[in-house]
Amino acid sequence: MGQALENRPIGVIGNDEFGSAIAERIAACHFHTMYVGLAGAPFVTYGKMLERANEASIATECPIVLAAIEDTETFRHLLVGEGDHQPPVTSGPRRGTILVDLGARTPREFQALVEILEQRDVTLVDAALIGGPDATAHGHAKILLGGDLTAVEIAESVLSLLGNVERTGPLGSAHAAAALMGYVEAAHAVAREEALALGSACGLSPETLQRVLSSETSPRELNVVQLARRAALARRIARDRHGSADIINLAAEKNARKRENR
Image (cartoon, rainbow, N blue to C red; front, side):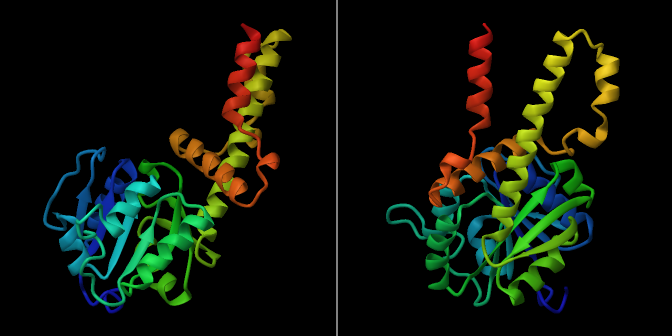
């Protein structure tokens, strides 16, 4: 990894607990890390390997930047700026900079971002963290990764510090795969909740329910907020692909049932 990154620092930008967990993990692995915590980001402990930075310094000093920003509009503002302001991330990056998008985008959103970044010689790859911030901080996460092969190989050398990396294919494939995983998990979670309620109504004790609904049928350990985000992304992708009728809005269905039971 040292040769691929030319011994330059690794940049991390985030506005939630995932960004801070990523930055602290990479620094803990003894790699110089420059971190920008946007509004909403939790506190991190800076030290010898973890440096407080701003978007402009990351853009010029880091050959690879990991961006954990869920909201597409916030991410886009970092790339293109607002009004007459220069975009802070891509205003002066070194040629060949790799930007790892750890947010949640649809294929259409990726295409729009690629058109912006290609003009600035920045290569975009997409990655998805499966698991919560704690797993990321300890290097036990699963990471899906998609994009151009050369850029993916460099990105993987960094992302492997966070856990096991699985390549999914072209740009956008990692976010799409994670969205589908989240959708299935969300459906599973709702079905389990329904089963618990029905079992209780049938007189089954909590102990019996726990035994019959074994861990084999319980959802995998996923951060609840992340699960909701992935399910929402699956619905957005479905709408883009004109398949929204095939994607159930689980949250709406659940709330509707609650209203009916009152």
